[in-house]
Amino acid sequence: VQLVESGGGSVQAGGSLRLSCAASGVASSRYCMGWFRQAPGKEREGVAVIGSDGETTYADSVKGRFTISKDNDKITVYLQMNSLKPEDTAMYYCATDFAYPACLDLRRVAYYMNYWGKGTLVTISS
Image 1 (spheres, rainbow, N blue to C red):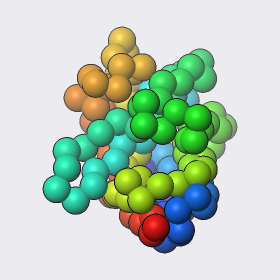
Image 2: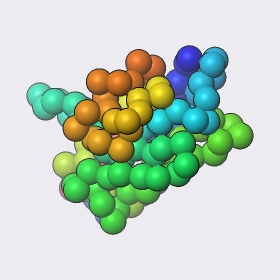
Image 3: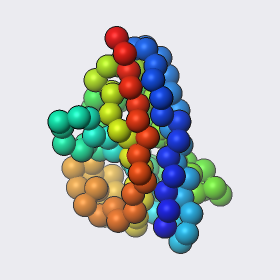
Image 4: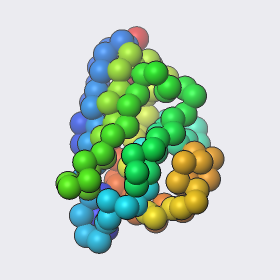
């Protein structure tokens, strides 16, 4: 499985970005797909995940501002990021795998994800 992220960039606080992650290989629309981020000097954290039936979970820090969605036909996951803050600055990674039953548990799901993209950088200036 290969994952390719796109859509990162630099915007001012309050702006928006839309990240995309296209999966190829033996990825399945039945897989759990998610977005994770890692800021300099900080640990990786889960941002949002979406399950096979479209169920979602968000980190508290992004609830109400970020929306995860997916296109099952394209096996592509998106992250719409609005009202961006400087603290959202990080490298954003998408990941996928079957991952159940941990798919919707942001504290655990990363350990079940064996397929990761190389990341796309998001920089938010104040």
